[in-house]
Image (cartoon, rainbow, N blue to C red; front, side):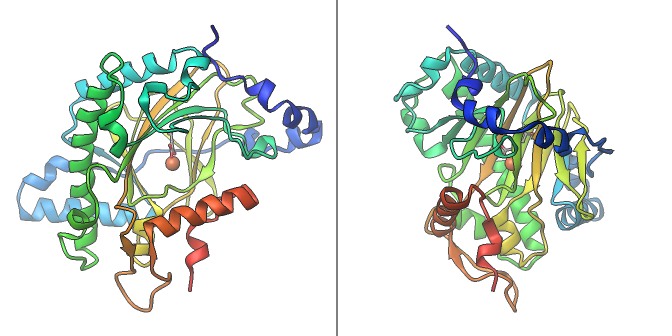
Length: 332
Ligand SMILES: O=C(O)CCC(=O)C(=O)O
Ligand SMILES: [Fe+2]
């Protein structure tokens, strides 16, 4: 039985209607400069007050200028990351019919996703599949080999790391240290496991279309295939060079709003590859639904909104326009 999602069958009309000119104009053919993100060694946090302050300052600067940085010595064992990847590969190797079963792994509906049901053209069709697991569902998830227990182990560590990073970044803004402990819980976050199958037309579509993340921050682990790109301050797409020892941290929309625009939630995307598949796992550090996001300084760029309201607005915008829109909706 086939493992791959039936992209061509499902999106036949889109493939047929995209004319040759559009295909040729697609900007994927551009050559992108490759970038090594600011690399921050978290072991420096334990070296003494001077080194610690310098390390925090590096994070603050990267979050403000890039919205992205890499971290090493982050406390998540490589062995656990390898195990997560191993389980991830196994679950995606299940037949497509199984992955789309209603109660797949006993997760809630739409946990398994592929393509983009709202795609109107090749440009907004993501050539990828994902298992998006809300961590409040984890206790009822099937064990399925060791997938569930590995996710539980990883999520517990990712939660500690995310909270720690968020606290350092928030302290600089004068936000009280208990903010994240009060508003986020291990079950309010989610883990999204991505698989990018080899794509026959990598110059015509993305692995994941450009987007910003809907969270405070994201911890991303990726394999060495590469393909992640982010938009730099000059509005140019740059490729991120994979680093086998590092995790990537992305500032999300909620931190941009909370920081009143100081930290940047940067658009990123993944280009598709023709020959090889690619895997990544994104841990989205999110608050509970009722949490109200309020800018830390005045005058506020954004009006206050609850996380629930933010997500509902995105759903509405996606349905109506195919575009997430995001924070600009909440600008004052
Ligand atoms: O696969 C990647 O490198 C990025 C994934 C991503 O941006 C996401 O899941 O939000
Ligand atoms: Fe993302």
